[in-house]
Image (cartoon, rainbow, N blue to C red; front, side, top):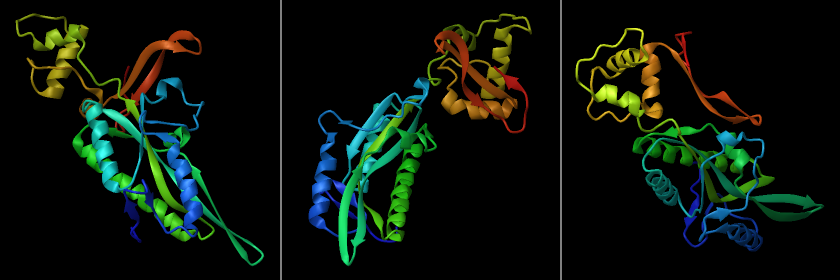
Amino acid sequence: MNKPFHQTQESNVIILCDAADEVKFNVIKNKALQRHDESTSTLTFSVNNNIDPREKPTKPYYRNLANLNQIDTFLDQIYRQQLRSAFKIRADFGTIIETSEYDGNEQKISYKYILPVDANTERKVPLIIKSQENIESYKHYMRDVIANIQERTQEDTHQKIVAIFPIMIRIYKFSLAGAAIPSLQKHIKRREEKRWKDCSRIAERKRIFKRIYRQEFDDLYQGFNFAIDIDEFIEKEQINVHVFTYGDKDQSPSYYAIHHYKCDTSDRDFN
C-alpha cells in the first residue's frame, strides 16, 4: 500500500487516512458500529430482491474489523465452519466517508457511513474455495481490495473513504459436491466379474471412471466431487457438461439448468 493505514483494536475499524474532524468522525463511527450486533452476528443491510432465489447465499457472515489479522482469522473460521467443503465466497466492506465542501471561504466537513450490501457482493466475481490454499489466496485478495480502496481515497480530495468497518462475507454452498450415488458407487467398489452391455449406462460410467481415475475399482470411492473434479473431467473427455435440476421455476415444476461447465476446445455436450 502506498501509505500505511492504522490498525487499532480500540477503534474497531481500519483507518485508511486521518479524519479532518476527529469529533464528527467518532460520532458517525460509533453509530456505524452499533448497526452490527456482535452477540447475534446480524447486520441491517439492503437486500437485492432481484437475485434469483436459487442463487441467494446460504450463509452470511459479518464482523467488525480492527486489523488485517482479524480478516485472516475470520476467513479461517468460516472455512472450518463450512467443514472444509467446497463453496463460493463473495465479500463487501462497510465504509465511512468524509466529504469536504466550501461555503464561501468556510470549509465544511461531514461524515456518513455505508453498510456492506447484498447488491455489491453480487457484482464481484466469486471465488470457489476448495482448500486451505484457496483461503490463503483470498486473504491476499482482501488486502488488494483494501489497497485499492485506499488508493482511490488518496486520489479524491473532495470525498474520501477514511475507514472501513464491517466485512460482510456471503457463502454459497457448492451443492454439487458430495457423496456418490449409491447405485453407482457399488459398481465402482464391487470387484466380481459381471458383464454389462456395452451400450448400458453402467458400462459407460465404468469406462469413464477408468479413464478419469486410471483404475477400474476403488474401495474408498466417495463420489464425483463437481467442485474439485469437473475441470479435469471436461479436459480429459473434451466435452461440455450441463447440469440440470428439477424444481419450482416460474410457479410450475420443471427441469432447469443450474451449472454449465465449458471446454473451450470442444463443442460436444453432455447433459
